Amino acid sequence: MNLRRGDRPLLIGHKGAAALEPENTLGSLACAVELGCDLVEFDVLPLNGRLVLGHSPEELADEPASLDDALALLAASGVGALVDLKWHGYEAETVEAIVRSGLVERALVSTCHARSLRAIAALEPRVTLGITYPYDRRGVSQRRSLAPVTAAALVALRASLPLRIGALLAGAKASVAVLHHSVVSRAAVAKAHARGAAVLAWTVDDLPALERVIASGVGGVLQRSWPAGGVHCQPLRRPFLVGVCVLAVAATGILAAMVPIGGAQSPPTGTTTSVESTTTAPVTTTEAATTTTTTTRPPKKHPKPQLIPLGVTVGGIHVGGLSATAAYLVVRAAFRAPLVLQAGAHRAMVNPANLGAIAYAKAAVAHARSAPAGAAVPLGVSIRGRAVRQLVESLAKKYSREPIDSKLLLRQLKPYITEGQPGKTLDPKASVAAILTALRENTRTGIKLPYVDVPPTISRKTFGSVVVIRRGSNRLFLYRGMKPWRTFVVATGQSVYPTPLGRFQIVVKWENPWWYPPASPWAKGAKPIPPGPGNPLGTRWMGLSTPGVGIHGTPDSASLGYSASHGCIRMRIPDAEWLFQHVEIGTPVFIVNK
Image 1 (cartoon, rainbow, N blue to C red):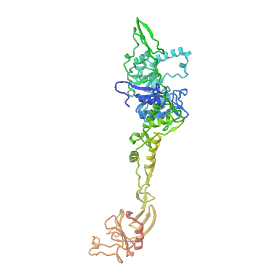
Image 2: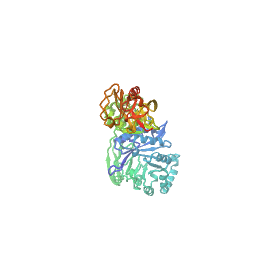
Image 3: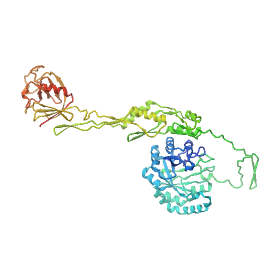
């Protein structure tokens, strides 16, 4: 993941875009994306068995967004995620959600709990980890009466941090130190950089503190508000998070432009600054013998946007409590998220746009504005069915498994047929239906494409007849697959005209055949004999895949049981007629010297 954008630090929206939408909501995240953030930070905590966005249980939205929805929104937008875990015990669920969203290479997980980071490192080493320090376990910093104690403690922590930061990072397996600005020092930052770790400072609300932490060499700053000129952050030392600057979107601004720190100085002595007033009476200020009279106008009052009723969803996406603009951004981003298709052990991600899918988000949001609380508004979607079918065909070629046919062997003079293996291929109709349903219902994960078994062409159950001829004992054994069926007395070739050994198959079947003299000394001068009594082939001929050799009837039944033929296998005429009806062209024939 390339986190550098030209020569400026990357922009990270803090809790989304809290100036325009409530913090830690899909609307806030969507606004941060629309405003051009490179990464978006948000808080995550467990609630009733699922992970939701929120800084604490007391600060949850009426309908908290799920972690999956937030990650899907960011994945579809092409930006990274800074996931701040507010507690421990849900590391596996967090990692699974990040992996499902495809944001593994674009995610930074931060927390003050080292064991959480160690657990995540073991589960998914590709996720970048940041340790937050210090951790106020007992909420001492929130008590005003203990402010002097807190200040003294922070001074002590700042002094000792250069000696501890290496162990802090190593103990958490973290590559980023997320430090409170009061404990940041040049020495601590230098120690972190020496380990290849980045340093972020939080939360800086005044210019002197901001200048101090920037001068210490931190790579990013987390703020609630920005000075008018903005700041310039030094690049992070770690390659993964190079030049990250965390921009908090506060009540007075959106995302500050990044300029050198020198552009954000205090007004010089001898000047007069005017401020907005709630009255139109002139205000006179005198400083350094200079007087300026300024008349200000009352601030404009912007009408509060109409919010969508609580509990309303559009295509399964919660938009209750959002403005129409934010709801549209959320629905659009969610629809653009890739579909995660699961085909057995294989996973594929597909962009809906590649399937020609179009969501009518504006119309759905307009409907949602007038819908009653808790209503489920459908999201109109148009899809190119041909594109979906072509996708399924390409996935089937990629993920299908060809069946393995059974094979015929000869073991201990008996046929042995190996077990065949069925193949698998995607069920085309069911797979197309699953994708179409996911697009219409705005589902992006858990989309399973079903397989169907492809039976082998040849199996033990379907294997036909097998013929085994024992030349030494002049017997023909017929098997139905591997099961014995019938045994016949036959005549095989003389020693001077032996029946060939090996594996063959029946290649031709003739009823009432003509006999043609072969090109052999014993048939020299002989003439063809038509069908009928006295024909040496009897009434049936089953030619083998070796020249001039076949199984046939014979009018000379006295030769049966002996090696008396000129290479062929002779049978009684009734036996040959019966065998003729129970073998096919292609029937395997083994001839052995036993």
